[in-house]
Image 1: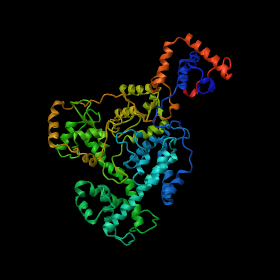
Image 2: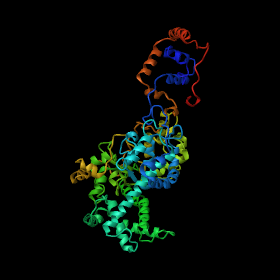
Image 3: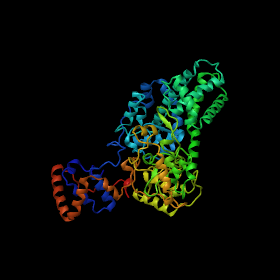
Image 4: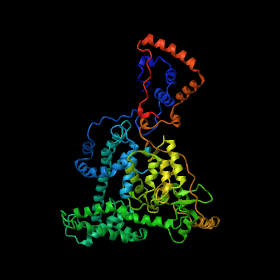
Length: 589
C-alpha cells in the first residue's frame, strides 16, 4: 500500500532502493512491511484467487440450482439448508474467512468432508482427501458423474476468482448432495420392491412382505449391489452369502425392523403402514442412523486393538497384530504394503513396525456399505474432540494457553479429564506457535499431529499430503496388489516377536516439523508477518535485499537525490518533506 500510494510518475522514476532508504529511520518491523509492500509478492495460498475478489453473483444460488436441477430438487434442498447451517456454523466460524465471511474452495471441501464423516460416517467420493491436499480437487466433483448441470454450477461458483462460499452456500452444496442421496434411496427401494415381486401401490402388503423388501434393500446397500441392474437370481445369490460376509447381518436386519416400528409409532403418518411412502420414510430414517449404528463395530475393533497395544502409545506391534490374525481375528490380516498405503503402518523404527490404531480403524479397509456417492466408514472420534475446541475458540487460531486450558478439561473415550498435559506436549504446542506469530492454527498439520500425541487412540496421525494413498480393498486389489498378507508373512512376523521384550512400550514416532495449511491459514493479508515468511518472496526480492546490504546509505541517498530531482522536473508533484504512509495497524508487529 505504501508503494502504490506514491504518484505513479514518481514511483516509476525513483529506484526501488530509494523507497527503502526512507524507511531506514523507521522501526525495523515497519521497514520490513514497506519492503514487502513495494515488492512483487508470491501468493502464500493456492486457495485464493490472485486478486482476492469474488465474482459478482448473477443470481441467488438456490435459484440457479432450481434452473439446472428442477424446482422439485430445489425444494428438497431448501428443506435441509437451515439445519445444515446450524450444524456447520461452529466449524465455519473457526476457519479463516475472506471479505464477506467467505471461505475458499479448499476449505469448502474440507468442511463438508468433516460434516458427513461426523454426522453419518460417510466417506463421500470427491470430498475425502485420500491422502492428498485439500486443494487437489473441488467439492463440486461430488456431482461430476451424476449431473452435468449441477456440477457445472458449483464448479463455476467455486472456480478461480470466486472468493469462496458463505455459510449459506456451503449448506446449499451439502443439502444438494443429501438430496441426491435421497433420490438414490428411493430408487434403491423401488428396486427392492421389484425384486420382491411387490407392487409399490399395494398398501395391503403384510408386515412380513414389507420386511422382506427392507432386507433386500439392505443386502444391496451393504454389499454395494448395483440396484438398477440387479436380477432376482443376483439377489438370491447375495442373500445366500450375506451372513458369511457380514457377521452382524441378523443384528442389522433386526435393527432396521426396530427403526420401522419407531417410525410407525409416530402419530400423523399420511399413509398406511404398508404404503410405499411410509416405507420410504422408514428407509430415510435407516439411512440417517445407519452410520452411527454400525460404528459400534468400529468401537469393538478399536477395543480389540487396544488389548494388543503397548505403552498407551496408540500403536500395536505388527507381530502382535499378525499374531491375533493367526488366532482367528481375520480382520487383522492386511498385508504390510496395504497397511503402508493406508497410512496405518508406523515404520519409523524399521526393527519394530507397528499399526497406528486410529489410522487403521478409520481406514477404507473397514468401510462397509456403499452407494454411488459414498461409503459408510468408521466415524472419526477426533471430530468429537475438535468440535468443542472450535466452538470455544471461534477463530482459526489460538494461543497455546487457550488450547491447553481446553484440552486438559476435554475427555475422550480413552483419556480421562481433567488432566495435566506433559511438558513435552506443552513445548510442542509452543513450537507450533513460534512458527505462526505466537498463535496455533487449529486446522494445520502440526496441530493435528499434536492432537494425535494428546489423544493417540482417537486422533489419526496426519501424514504429509501425497505420502499415502488410502484405497478401498477392491480398488487396491485391481492394481494386482495383495490386500491380505500371505500365511508365511504372518508367521515370519510373529516369529520375530522374541526380539521385542514382552511388555516393552512401543515408542511414539519422532515429532516431524513439516507444516501443511493447504490454504486454510486464510488470506495473506490476515497473517502476522514473521521473518521466516521471507522465503515466500521471489528471486527479485532476494536480489534487492543483497543490494541493500552491499551499498552504503550515503551512496543510496545520492542516487535517490538525483532520482528525486528528475521526478520533480517530470511530474512536479513531489512535496518537500513528504513521508511514506505508515503501515496499517492490522499488520504491525
